[in-house]
Image (cartoon, rainbow over all chains, first blue to last red; front, side, top):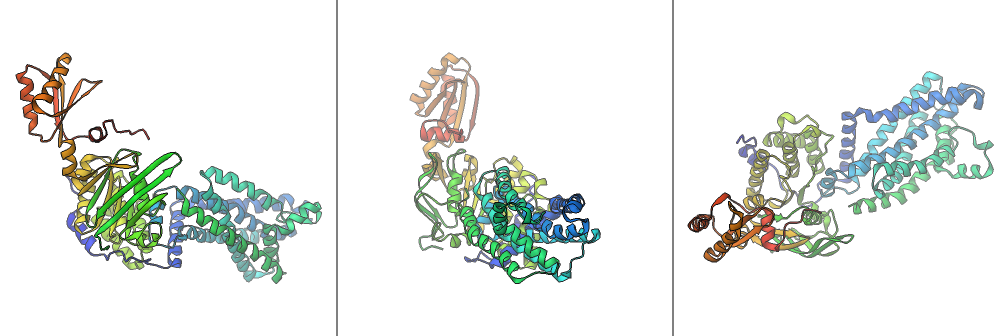
Length: 276
Length: 318
């Protein structure tokens, strides 16, 4: 037999390591960072994952600016300043669905058995994936801003405004990510995750102020837009980007993801602990 | 280590999925530093037992202590001392072998430099150095298994679970995995192994529990089990099928061996306490002028073990 595993080498390899310590070896933050590294490695191996966070928002920005700009705002330039912050929010909403979709596929694989039997902070595989997603959103937001700049977008908030907007978007994405994570853990197949998530996503995204000023909407719809967390975020980001932000708008925009996390994160973790 | 010297101790363990009692009142005692084999067909409940002991599933009833810690009440203490190599590759297919091991090492608290050094050492020891930078999805079954086991010993666990480590492997890869397992246990790790192969349990395990429908139907050392079911099995096909009954009668009465005729093939199966007795059987048949079409002597298969223990064939349907 061609014995490829030299016992001597293996003996050495076994002897040279300490026993497991009988306690958690690392902190929660280190675990989360390790898992976000794992998610980034996956992007490295499958860069096509980035396609939907990059191409889709560019397409929406270019298409809608020239399609609706003249009719809705009188000129493409003024519509671009209205639309672009909204497109950033829409991108985060649409792609955060894939957080759930990916998790649903990922968690059914054998490697999660290993993670779940390891002495690590229990939510770290999920939180790590969400942190990596925040990096993806930041990248895609930056790309949309650059495309906007080429088309004539001149944010009055300047660089600090853009940076602050992206941070706010990331925080929102983290909050909304827990909703789709909970959905992903509650249902059986990835396609069900998509269907259920879209049902949630469509009214939140389109019954908002992303594309139009809600002043012309019927009262009942205006009432919904007024409390829709997506619309609140759009108002805040629009304010920050265009240099007329106020603390109240930003505060309310921060409130929604905080409440969502407080409710959905424990539900998601409860579902995770009971998965299979 | 526990004062009792037991790495695993369960009593009345039950797990039900719908109407299926996958684990039905299991009592196990596994001594520290030994290899314990759970032997049974697909769907017998082996994997469910492992998943409960590795804190992945909560039992519905009963108690399980792993290295002295209750799996339900102190899962973190259990996790800090065990490693699991699941039935389906518990490595990340999208990452390379190198990345997989660094990932596990970092999660177990090794520094970046230590993790890299340990990974290189393990890849070398498991002869995966050339495949280090390939994605695991391009690995062969045997390579995947070796990487999986390597990931389980990045830090030496006190207790290692190997769920069907050689199912689906070719004989050469299987031998490699067996070598690995022996080397591991020589270092003092306790091992709980599940398998569908009697030969595997026989070669590796100090003690074996035969599992059927979520219950332990026999337990003991390999020698003890064989004493109850015979160390080897002689298969005989009589040339003239009408003499089959006479042959059976002869072997039972003259030699006192347990004989079973398989209805569909007219093959006589003789369970022998000692393989040397095969010669006596053949001599008796020759003396009685019963000619053979075919005969073979071998280890009992899992099916035959099941037949011996339960009086029915192993039910692989689940």
